[in-house]
Length: 67
Image 1 (tube, rainbow, N blue to C red):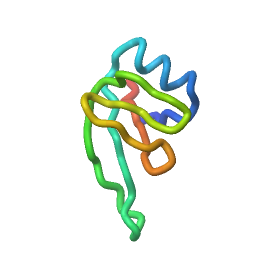
Image 2: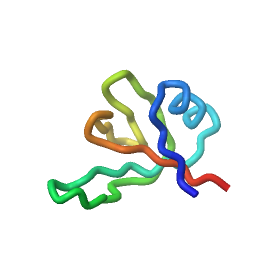
Image 3: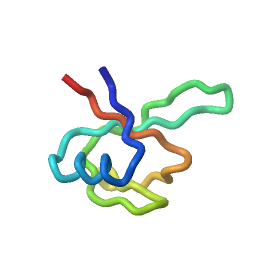
Image 4: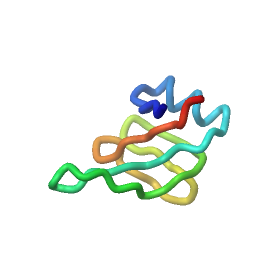
């Protein structure tokens, strides 16, 4: 089961525990495209850095695989 990270607290917890997060963006046809998987290095109200790349929160979805 996948859990989508929406709030600052959820992003903080994922960054603190260093779990792998998948970054997904949707095309104009609403097709999900997986861009990266990695650990959250930092985040702000507008951006999230996963690995060496920064993604805009409004344009991206961040998911964690739950057990």
